[in-house]
Image (cartoon, rainbow, N blue to C red; front, side, top):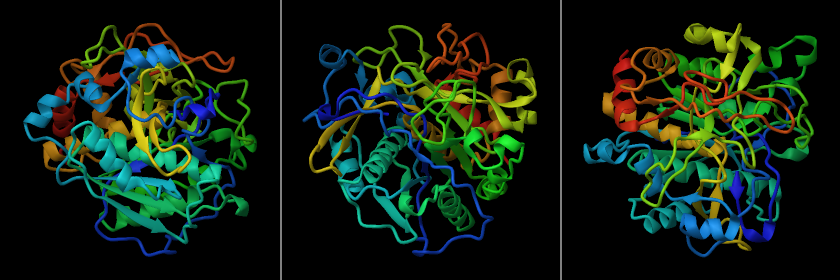
Length: 456
């Protein structure tokens, strides 16, 4: 979600999200793809599309200035580092060094390295080399193509947020060559790219900030879920090879978008890949910080220009790791699993220059922000433990069930909710809920606890 260049004005939120993951040692050959079953023609778009309020500002502003100008808070990475208790980890040398985050987005951004360097310099962070892998015949970037600029915005957000949390981690961006004119969804290309990287040992964590509503997949209305289940091959691979896979829970609260990409369902729905039990679903909170990054009140549910996705899957039954929260999820897979900052009112400053008409600083929100932030947390845990934490679901719910606070799991329980577009959502209550999952993190405690709980 993008509080973007002011010329674009206030826009309604959409619900889909885009991807982040770890760094690359062997480039995937152009045009190479893993064999996979034919997949659905459900359209997938990046979550940031339509989330535009502030764009192209010449330099980042303070929250007070943002309040005066746009009636929102806006935060920089130094505030996030304080809010999530990351600085003490950095002082111990836990920075993500030696670990790789893989980010998969259609088209990518031609200015991603320059933009990360500018972002890092602004806030006194070391920059890092972004490796770009082109998957298939990626067309030349066209800044007048809204599809491409939407994905470029997502790519920029993913890279800068992952780097903000894990500054020494390697970052690999995989650009897929989806052409909307061919009617493809992008999901098969993304899954093929992920499988290739997993099979070639590239990346410790994959962060996906994209999704599509389960109900829009072919066969869903007939109870045939094969079009989704045939896309799971990359996740099955990741599970075997201890690669962590994350996905944004979406920005439509308890509902989400129909196939037209504009109209919301008038009932509770969920989205894939967030709802996949092999994926850790990342929901959204709203931070309330002062200029030093200290909380002035507890976190609440993200619900402003979008709302944190959450609810029951209509495709997947309850996985065993959620048996301890069956009173909340029932017989179905419930999302999200855990949450980080995503509200536009409290959005992140991001620098971009891919659009020559609006170069400068933007403010982003959405679960497409929360997901790459959490990919950085995973990279820190990988380094701290000296091993890939892999599929964290069993460990995460175990940490939640036993001494959650001591393990760095912070409950979000202020009673706010993710109702959105007229569809009643779920409240943030004590313990697990379908608005924020188990809650959010205190990284100083959570990172070593996760590393210890995932020793293979």
